[in-house]
Image 1 (cartoon, rainbow, N blue to C red):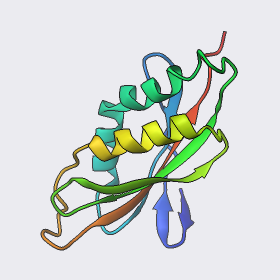
Image 2 (image 1 turned 180 degrees about the vertical axis):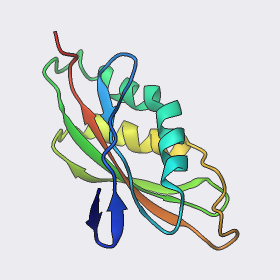
Image 3 (image 1 turned 180 degrees about the horizontal axis):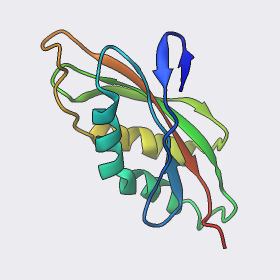
Length: 130
């Protein structure tokens, strides 16, 4: 565990069924349970994998990291999502991943109305090991 800007970070790696994507643990600002974020992302990992795999036909060597910064509103909807950091530098994958993030529904903020949380979630996209 490490501290970054007063926010605790725990590195936990999870692999999707097709091994194209690794989702690491989130940076959370706004008193929102990290495990809720993790559960929703893991249950929807296929949406992010889709963004990546559909671009592999155009660029079969495409790999890299994308961190998405998004805001969870008090009702659990995603108010905004954008790429905060990328080593992939592929606008199509990044745009698709941001759009997919905005479709997700999280549990309502435990603080109730008027509370929100800013989350940064890192993804690593790569070809499966042969």
